[in-house]
Image (cartoon, rainbow, N blue to C red):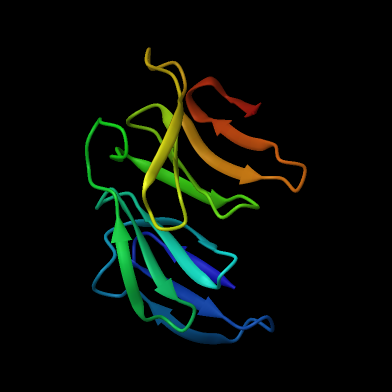
Amino acid sequence: VFVAEEDNHRISVFQTNGQFSHIIGKGQLGWPCDVTVTTNDQLLAVDRDHHCIYTFTLDGNYVSKFATRGPGRGQLSGPCSLTTDLYGFILVTEGGNHCVSIFNKDGKFVHCFGSEDGKFNPYGIAYSPTGNIYVSDNGNKRVQIF
């Protein structure tokens, strides 16, 4: 079990029986908001403070990071949550850019969708086995299905 600890700037790892195992990202992460495990067993952590995505091995070794802060395509502003789909694409919600950005498994920007008028405020995200993307729209108090 992986727990993103925003205030402690780390990810805590627990065994399935609840026993603490180890820490990931201490000293590297600013404000980790969410984590997910990829199909190739890497841990992705979205960092709201550094406006990027960190990649770690499951035992905690740093692999890489991608994205930078900004309003442009492939840049992140206020990233909140992330998930992966069946094809390995990484979907990241961005409160600051009012969109969901999509990256390939190597961290290269692919596409984004959302609102240019600021009326979409994505926060949480989940991908279903049927291919639906569920996004909690925080500012509008709703869940949207794409």
